[in-house]
Image (cartoon, rainbow, N blue to C red; front, side, top):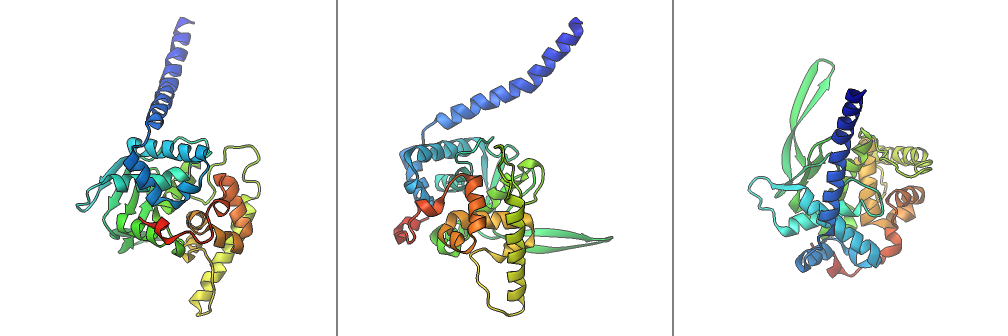
Length: 286
């Protein structure tokens, strides 16, 4: 009997101590206030920051503080990681976590940053035939692995939000999507009753985007605020919809009201209510 209790005690320690350590560490990292320079960089990267209520602004600062300390930022192809790079990427990653219980992207350790669009090797299997080719990338999120970002592309996204793109929001949306164990366009819901209409709305809007892509492919004129890349898969649709939700929220709400409503419920934020319709140009610096 003593042996049994000893085994139980050891098992509890093995499972509980790492959790308690990580929780304590997160609280410590989140409690470290951003410097004045970091706050200015955050404001430059994320115009929405200045429109957040004080409580949410403080929460975002805590998220950014945690991410820049908890994650390893690695420069690729000679890129030197600056504070601007860290804070800008952390701003968008931290934005997706506002008002949500989270473990700060638990399966993400490293963020790889390239100076510009980079080349990755893609391999495909068709039955017994393997083919590969080079593919230009702005970013990618590896399942249970690193996030990769092109810094020049993210800078362009910050300068031209009217295009509705943001590679950081896109890739970190993928990391949220994987938290239930798969890339399938349905993120992990933590509240009872959440996501009841998610499947119906997202399936309908995903098929709608696929139809628009077919129209464009046949030379027809079609307009949507959503990037047509979202028609590739449900996972890409969720990432593209997340970009539009935060970057061009007024247009998304006008064109895809139900989709906007589902994202508003999931992210627990309403960017269209917070952001002015036509923000001053100098607020989109990056």
